[in-house]
Length: 169
Image 1 (cartoon, rainbow, N blue to C red):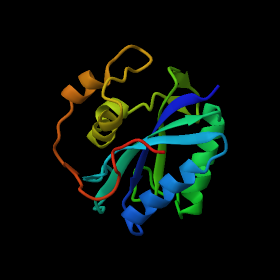
Image 2 (cartoon, one colour):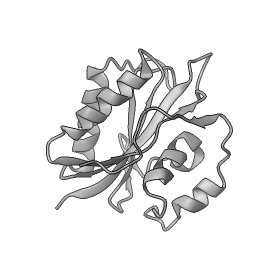
Image 3 (cartoon, rainbow, N blue to C red):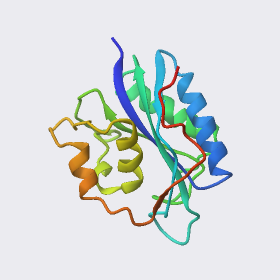
């Protein structure tokens, strides 16, 4: 039985719109995975060291038979294929793919934490996620709407181009 998962996507290097579009296409081709919808795209200021270009961010909803660790591995392969180098924590990157939520599971291992540990702190995750799943609740019962209500829109701009914000085929 497929599990519903939500992924966060971000890029601020090597033509970010192209990086995001390629990542969405690659996610849609993962085995046993169906892309349900893609949020509109946002531009956000970088969080991290030094002066960095702005990010393009979005979120996608998928149904997948991949278990969380297998999904993480598949997403990291996509990142590597698109030139991701893990040099500086929170540094600039061609592509960042995060599992935000997976079914109604909470998972805390050294390599993977679900829900994403900083989901509630990042407006560039909350806004696109709310576009595609406004009634969503986290495994602990916290509503996405309550997290969004505490989030400032500072530093984030919804873009006209990019994701359709609609359901996939």
